[in-house]
Length: 254
Image (cartoon, rainbow, N blue to C red; front, top):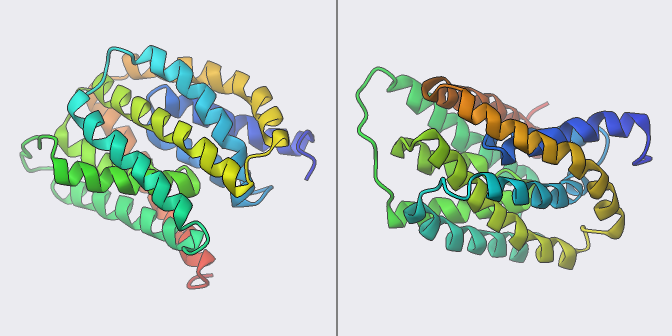
């Protein structure tokens, strides 16, 4: 596939925009970037190509949300997320990507179904928890390393806390900025991050950066309840797709 062809750019530019929107505070939509690119290139190549775009977009996101975050959660999630990246790197040749994809999809699907069943119940906001934060932070780092799909584990842990939307978006942005920076040397060591990828990512960073600013503006405008409902609906749709992708990859479906 010619990485400067019109067909490739037709998939790569929307993928970069989705990454940018996710860095602007709409975390789940960024997960759609890799599947969109895999229509034309391999999942491994797609993940490696998008990583520099994530990192560049993170710089804008960190500035936008420099005052909006939950410090208690970040103290739990950042170290465990970095550890999850290390686990992903150490086990990259042992665990099939399809199995991880299936696991991510199942986690997100079960979480969304549980929320739907309990939607009419008054659920008390849960505080940050060291054990749960460490566990889900590790899972988020691991799944983010494999396929940039750290959002569902993060949301399973954070959404029940009922954080204010800007704090939620900022916590997500800061956490994954650190995780993505941690992934750079790991991807390079595995040989998936090449000079060619960086050159293409530099071009795609422009629409991604603009989308980051747009995403931040959208978060500020969208009312809080519709904001979280939209996140959970998107999470559910993406999770169902990941389940099917995982089953297909493991030759269990289709």
